[in-house]
Length: 138
Image 1 (tube, rainbow, N blue to C red):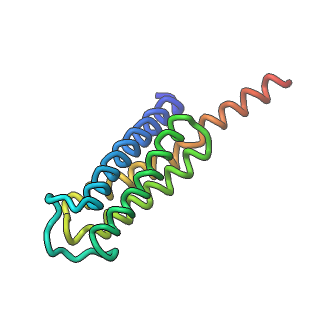
Image 2 (cartoon, rainbow, N blue to C red):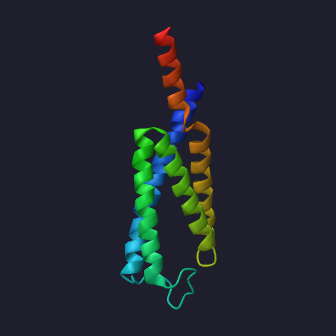
């Protein structure tokens, strides 16, 4: 299999997972701001209270959504903002480990896969374009 095709699959996976994470974090964030009933009562939070955690999740969700669309658009900005957003998601997953251990490990693992895909294959499209441009000049 050609590296460009394999890399394209990783980039599509990273963009799709980033989009999904952004939507889910947005839902969780707005639910936390609204003090929804599905959150555990009398729980201790790493960041202040449930309302503050909700705003943090909404901000992370916005960064993840920007990253997802930027990944689909291609370019280095999408690659680096995607790695940054996945890193934020991984740190958030580790911080929520006491409350949701299995969910946190799964989210952390997916974030690591996103970082791997973007770090390994995120810049390949530009390498091929530059190589094609040089050959066209000569």
